[in-house]
Image: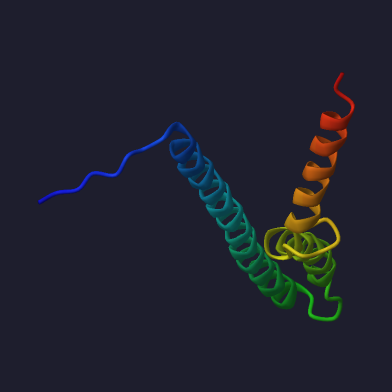
Length: 106
């Protein structure tokens, strides 16, 4: 005997919202890992070129430092959900704004 579950519009909306959040999260992760992979490949290449051509001045470190800061910030925005401007802060601000709008309606 088969049982069917009733799908209410609210449940469909919740599933759709959850799917969209999961999809957005996967996009964030893919973006970060792509950035990290590119960083490692390019900086390794620049280090090799630098060491082959002039090992007295390690200019590739400037590129590694600059791009490294960008990778670190990208990691923070991808993985720090409890950070200063993380996901919890964002959700709290959304609730505050919604409450403020609700209380100001005539």
